[in-house]
Image (cartoon, rainbow, N blue to C red):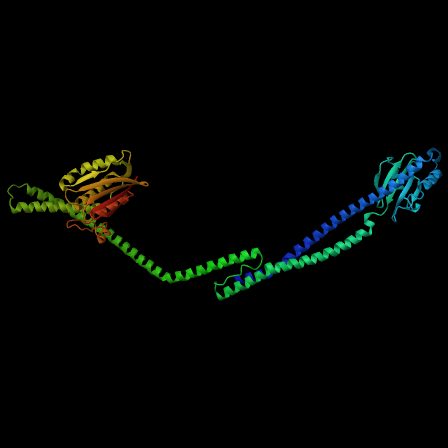
Length: 511
């Protein structure tokens, strides 16, 4: 199954945003309804109970006031019998409680505190409280108003009338659960809640459609059109929908802009790809040519080494023979001059063979830490004969005593002598050879500047090639050997034109 088909199946198993929000919305509405119902019922019940107790309090105060006034006008000791108490309370309270608007299940009750007998109940004895409720009330002989919760619902407010040993009880048997107000409240709550829920859901889905669903649908259609037509120049509206959708549209437009720019860059790269390939191919060919050249040089070096070894022994014999012949005193005139010329040529051939062997068969490297000041002083001393012979003067800049370099002593000495020899040969008589030593990063730079004509560009690129020389009697191995020695010591050498009249040789070594 391809990835495209998998994506289609995954998109089909999903649902719209409205459907995903429906269940959480219904759950939130139900939770809000239950919370409102519970809180509303608690508040309504509390208010009803508080109002009921307040009404009972007023009724009880009226009954207590009537008994107090009646007691003050009579002698209570002679009327303590139940019959006389009933007659007394009837006379005392007659007409005093008629104006109280008692409910269907409410009234005022006078109870004998000692026997628990009902003395009088207003407005009717049929409303008298149950014996269990009465027994609970008469246990407390307290003149303060005490509230009691009746067993079958409702409240009673009682006080003890000590002069006659009576309990005055104002009661209401109708609890909040039995009131018509609670049922009406539920009906009203359900109606208001249902209407509010419908309005909220309509409002929510309208807002979702206008701010999210509709803009996303437009975005999806435009994206499909872009991919189908493979064009990314159109942009989405950034003023429709919610702030999040607008921000998403801005980000999408930015993405489209990047894709468009990248598409143009790809086309541009495609146009230049062929040129790049041609350039890399040319570089590869050059690298292959350099590799072939290196292999040729290695072969030439090996052959030259073999030839040098084969020529060195007979050349040594010739030199010894010529030296013996030169000792004969009878040789004069042209023969003497020919003999001197042969000695010079033998010496030149010997030096050439030594150069070839040095280039073809490098010796081992012995790297040590060399005090540079002491080393350069010794080098200047060794070069004094060369200075006198070539009529050149070496000027060495001051060197700190603690400065050291890491190199092979013999190879470095050979390298510097070769460089100085080239500087002497390239500079005019009575000129200066300036040597300056500086530090750069972790390296020591030895700069040797001599006077002379600048090096041509076509020659400068080939200076370090083996067997390349501009001298009539050179072997072309001096600078090549010098560069190899420097590289073996971890350094390098370069020749530059300082100006029209000076050439500078820079040797780089590790500090």
